Length: 307
Ligand SMILES: Nc1ncnc2c1ncn2[C@@H]1O[C@H](COP(=O)(O)OP(=O)(O)OP(=O)(O)O)[C@@H](O)[C@H]1O
Image (cartoon, rainbow, N blue to C red; front, side, top):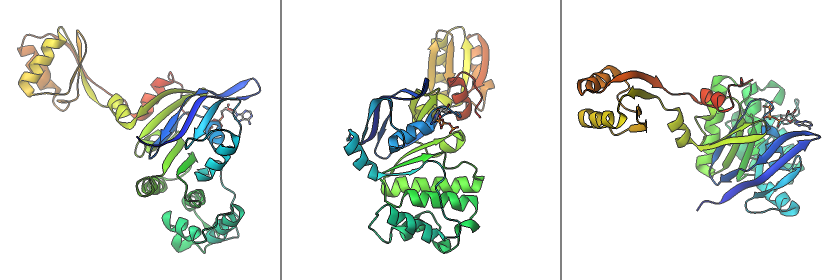
């Protein structure tokens, strides 16, 4: 069984009378790329800050690598790397000098970690350039280099691809996948750029109003968002039998006595309908259904617009 990297139980964070994170129960296993998806103000940053020890929970508990309690959590947090809020880099120092500054400040003994981190994020050839000359994409990658300086087992990233162009987003995504594949780094990443997360996430947590409204694996989400052909007929069991017989269809889901979903035959619905009608089945409707990740999330939180 895979190691549980993070677990929270009934975690709550209030600011005065306002509840930013409410009764949060999340579990992350080693190797997960967990996408925390939520609109502005949903409580993503507050949750990530609690994990990193930047703000205390009001109530509830959490475990990191199996450790709980203030002291043990503090020690376990040394195995975390994070980007929460923009890291402060000195504009007139080079990328190398900036990272070296943080290496010393954080007491990281391994001297070549700066070189390694820059190499990992693809900034090794510009390590001597001043931070102020960096593009936004390079700055974000340098932020990631800082987050992995301590070779973390768990990476916590708050909207790390905000403001990046499509190329920058792709590069950033590839680095995260490389970290996950090569080092088995567990990654918790928040974003409202839903389409982007769908390319890397292995699990999803949908958060709204401080509550985790749904938790799904990538496979489960794919199933929910898949395109299907929905048929309204007079007898769904008989219709399924006809389609299995005529087209050897295997992916037929009977929803109720008169409704069925097909994951095959989408390219030629007219043949599906014709076969059913020829077998004496009445077809009242045949239409494609399916949602992309963004629509799925909007439906889930009740149609509120994503900012
Ligand atoms: N220190 C604080 N004092 C008072 N309210 C706060 C504080 N920090 C966060 N909040 C409130 O808690 C709610 C959740 O904020 P949070 O930053 O966690 O949301 P978010 O999902 O990260 O949103 P965004 O995508 O905009 O960053 C917001 O309504 C915010 O105003």
